[in-house]
Image: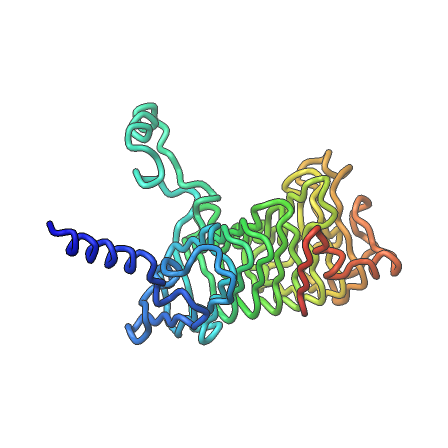
Length: 339
């Protein structure tokens, strides 16, 4: 090989290696199930996004039903997934906790050992998600995230691990364990969203603010199951939300503490007749000593406080003034959310 040819090949290699992807820019990526966009799946659009982007990237998803088990990995940021129409742009999957796992989840040798011992490994709650967000600074708008598994076990629609996540005008559909806010100290903001489910369908350890959200209880059970750590000042804050119940659901608890020190506050919310007079359940008797269950100026037939459990509390007006987005989300960084 001549020296000139070698230099030419090296120059070509360097030029190719340094070339930016055509998607490495703040332009919008279009996803369409019918093939009219750049990609047919949201997963493929996520794959072309650059790691740790310092600009805002929009993935615009046209109307359609996308059967995907989607993960937004921790090395991404500043991505907005925006649907064309909230009710007609649907990301859906149908895993549930009691599905037997295959070799994609367990090493084949270990799986065979478990089966030989008569123990068929199950998927479990935390792998049952439709969408898992491991990244920070992700926004979802105008889109439905659904777990449409049959009622055969826990089935998560949205599983969050990242910080500074925003959900605007979204729907989260499922039965048991619809929304799992999995990571302590992370902050989530839900604005004008619809969330439905059966048992513990909003659960986890994050600090999450729900503003003007519609919460639909499909059966007699529990809306929330907070596992707020003791050293975390706030858990779930529902502000100006509307709770409704399906026909026949007339004994619904506002929540029960999944772990000690669970924190849940309903303020300025509309509570229906279907909410139980006692309001809250302890899950385990000793958690009455640590649960932080609060209400302030709720309205509706389910808002009467005369029969509430003695270990829940009504905020004073002075205390309620301190419950602001700025205070609830205050950390060393500055993250301002505009309602």
